[in-house]
Image (cartoon, rainbow, N blue to C red; front, side):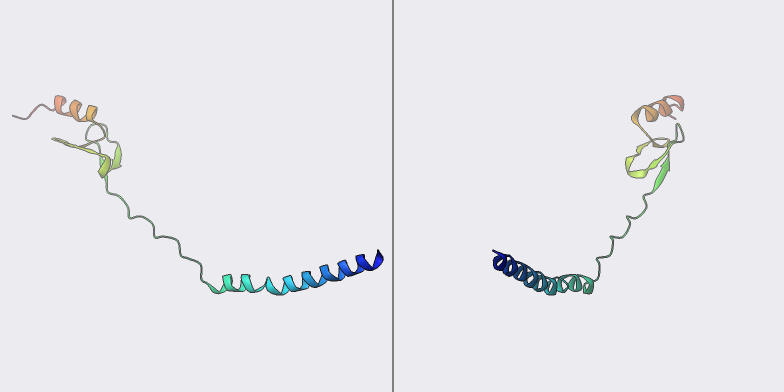
Length: 87
């Protein structure tokens, strides 16, 4: 029984040592490859001001109207009513 335990311990030590020799190769390969750079930041968006309330918002979200750019349909309608049709 003691011989069996001793043989098992020797086999475990040999397996551990063989595994330890193979492990460092993988991290070295990973260290040699340069990390991927982060993507460049998105370009800034143009900002416009609502002609009714003065809110600043991205131009692609603004609604165009007769008096300029607006933050919503309600402000565009209110501006057009307040300033008349101009005709």
